[in-house]
Figure 1: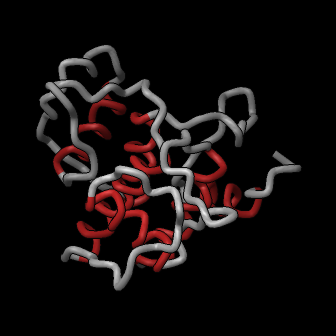
Figure 2: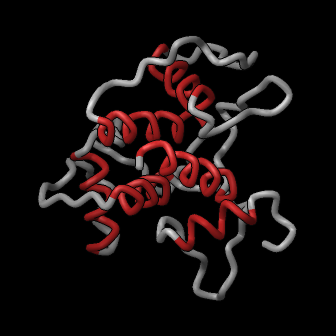
Figure 3: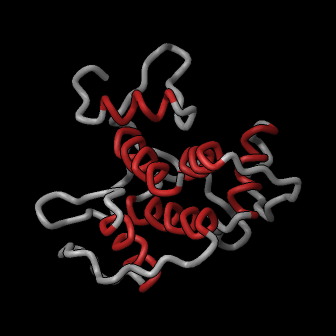
Length: 174
């Protein structure tokens, strides 16, 4: 991690209890984030709890703690499933993470955030209005930035990028 561009963000995220390293003492900043990991990070960051059960058929094999995090993310509308499945081990894309952050922001602030303009990225492609608004919100609030005029929404989110995004997100909602 010492050579990671996100070292400062990672250290802040760890200090804030948002993100953890691996049992072997490493962080692996370039590893891709899964949907279950992204949901857990947001639930921990916002200290969300739920006694309700999410309607996902593919989370039974997880620990009670992980299921509780998925349940809370679902209850507070941070995550949605598809066809009764959460697909917890799928890599989360930058666009999907932006949607989760946008929904978490809306929950925390108590109203829907509507960006004043579309972010200046050239690679939105065929993403729906909700996704474009989420990415634009991240840009407008300085939570996430692209590179060379692109956001790379279909690329998998890395643990390093997630640390930066979550630290910046928490700075906007406290």
